[in-house]
Length: 97
Image 1: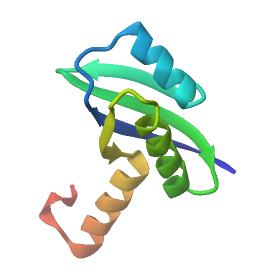
Image 2: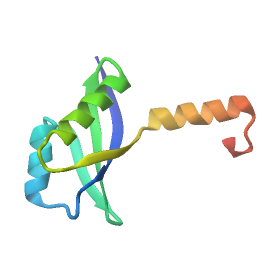
Image 3: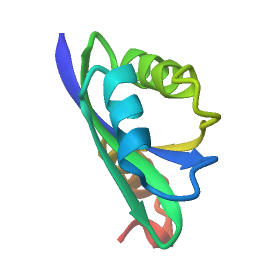
């Protein structure tokens, strides 16, 4: 098993409350950092799983099944960003720098 780091961007969160933070912490088994910036809520994860995809899918399920009406609208991962940059470099994209 490998530890994977990624961020889930959330919809359905108006404010970061201690009750919501506790519910998400419990639902995700505590492998999160819950934050809000410029009105956008997000969870930073460090989750152990066989693959990054498995880690993300289980995290999304945990968050969306927490019973708080929260929906995951985007996933961010340094691994994905690195792969996108390498692919751009391979294609000779001017944005690759």
